Length: 170
Image (cartoon, rainbow, N blue to C red; front, side):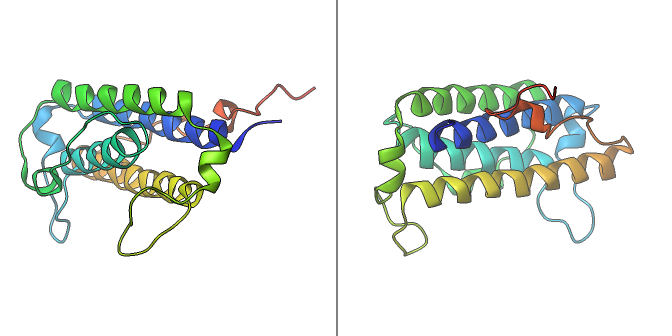
């Protein structure tokens, strides 16, 4: 039987692999920072927001990484290279890998250590929320990349074959 910690961790890490692939798929650094009329966040901005969000809520709060979030900078920083953004994705992946290596299903049932948006929730509920938040913005990044560059979707990005319980069909 798959533990809930393992399932949630696998989903988050799968999406971070896709996030890295999305950044790599932009033809140039400049394309990451373009915006279209009515669209305020570039792909680069969304990468910074996602990595900051996960580094804080999972890496720092649950994993004790010491990461200090600067949410304002996530939305105001511009012009980082693809390599710099990939570095942030890799740091986030490492922090989540460490944290999920020590989390237990019992921790998921407990209250998340700090209030979120002025409410208290269970750790498990909040981790599911964070996975949805990551997937939501990952879709925005994919759409942004395709709009700004004229390229197509990344095949197999959200493959069920990467889930913890996946096994070949007989």
